[in-house]
Length: 290
Image (tube, helix red, strand yellow):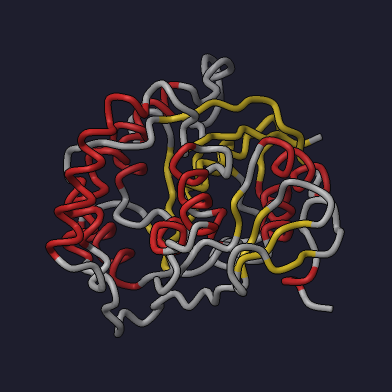
């Protein structure tokens, strides 16, 4: 039995879901996938248009990051003998590092060589590599953040267990990830069951170098965290959609035609005002050592 056969939350069997690569737990609400994660460490493959990706994601990510930073724990900052340290796992272009740098001593880890080089070119402290291997054994942090990253890590349990080893006393782990309870994901599931799988495959980032291998919710996060020695102490949602850069966000997948991207963009612009009243697709979970 391999990792794809067992639910990382309740350890019960996983079975095929809406597609042969889509996995559902037979006991709890966890959803996963058997999609292969093949991060372009060497920077030699161009499946995605990175310029459009940056244009499409920058506005929404920066806005959401500012909200996230405003909710980071700051209660014990006064009188500290050392600066608070923050680790951004999978820091990509370094946007979160830039915003958090005024409040924390920051460090980013990024496996993709092009993204790591881009972040470093802005003077940001970034190590190319994987978590936790890019860290020294004695390094510890007050905050360890996974921004749109934890859903790409196959062995989620080991990643969270590694956080315990690198958390300073009283530290927090922040998981900012897509939620299976979000309205867009629910609609994509309905469409997939109805014979229209394209949006469902895009939600899982099928065909991307680093697709999603988990879709989480409150219950699965709580259980997976507990198995790693962490407990859930807070959760909240972030805005799902910004019309700013939306066309570029859809089009950075090179397999999407201009016409299709324009059609989807138009539909989403119409729906955008209503989405704020529906379950958000982006959720943040805050964990601390048990």
